Length: 510
Image 1 (cartoon, rainbow, N blue to C red):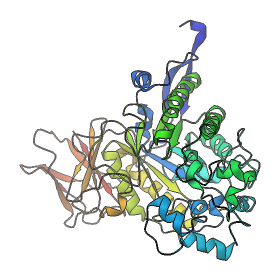
Image 2 (cartoon, rainbow, N blue to C red):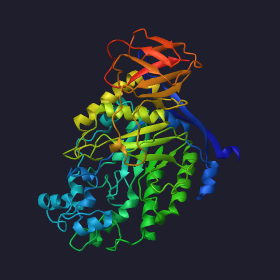
Image 3 (cartoon, rainbow, N blue to C red):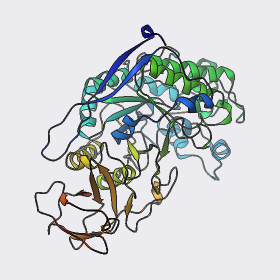
Image 4 (cartoon, rainbow, N blue to C red):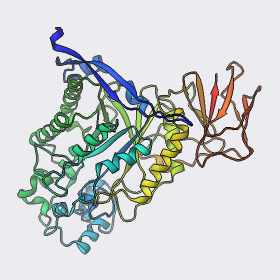
């Protein structure tokens, strides 16, 4: 490679390393060569040969997901409102393989509140989606205070409405609804504040998202570019025309926003898209080289074969892993138990549950991508903002046990087991005072107690006499911590009163 074909680009990212009594520090992330020569070919053999998981991503640990779109106007059910509003009984049963004797609740709600689906379709919510109170600076400020290091807004969901200035569709936020480049404003503000910025694409499922029947507006050819050109045959394979639409739209997103992270939702993993997957991976990775930065591609990969291991960063939706995965991975979940987008009956998880999830995931070499759902006017609901700020307060004390850490020889100890797989979080029980998770950094072991032990003492059985403990401290406390290495493990005596409201971190010097 000639010298004139390359130059060095220093990518600055501002990583906030918070710990008790310490100031924030700026950190230089990665120095790589910017190279205009494409080395990734659109096949898995080539991608596996050149790809490695970016270490910088694994160090960030905590990010924010954002589901915001025209579906926040009806604010009913979930972000799948545009699909379910067209689901009469027979089709709902056939497409989702569910046994139902009555109409879908969203279908009935829409007819009652908004009118017949032929005269008032999903397209009619878009002019109502104004986002008049959206302020990118306020959002980014909140996310920074939460302790998040990266932000991944939904660029386009299954509904087909792009939240950015698109060059491939008329249905985008810069031209309709808010009439602002939402993604662009967030990227500009986030990057100016040192945040790592990504985008998610859910567009592949647009092909089969809307039910096509003559008594709905979804069959009107005038709106085929929103509702997809698919016909009324439920089994119609994805057309080459639509695959090209998907490709053009995704490349437009990549080229114009240069996302550090590109996250794909399900349906891209079905056989119809088999030829597109290595093609888009190679394109994005080559673009990263042109931009002079390591980029992260993620997919939920329900089939486990769609994106082979060692080609993307593995992601689990609303689920975790029961043990350590030596390759980086991520859980994406929502603050909301029942929705990703804002709905009027939104039910939030507790701050304690989410902090415990973060700790458990990080101890197993993972990251947490936590979703919030703004209202249609562009405000983030108070209960969600409160939870994010409380997570940030916890990280301001305990962050040194989270950021830039590595997994230890075991992820933890205690009786509470974690279920494996997508959508398994509802099966998990709350952690107890007997549960503990480990991380390590700079010669220190962090033992994070998921709840305060009842007797203000704990024995860490994973630490043996071969581990020479030099000292123990409790993050957030000035109390002197008494410890003793015994045949059973490391015995630690804690202050009589607990410190903090959530997980508690012992810093163990080895």
